[in-house]
Image (cartoon, rainbow, N blue to C red):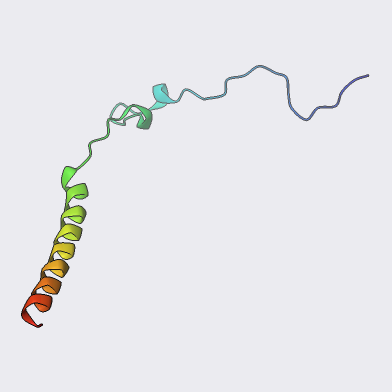
Length: 67
């Protein structure tokens, strides 16, 4: 009995090697090094901490001074 499968059985490469097709001034995206900007992560955290501390200070001031 012959099976009728939709998949092909021909061997082939799963991933195309396009790194040799790149222009000399282009970079292969898989081989680029990521340079993270530290300020981009610290600034939102610093702003959130400032807002929280400002709210705590305002609440403390109103509770102690207004009471």
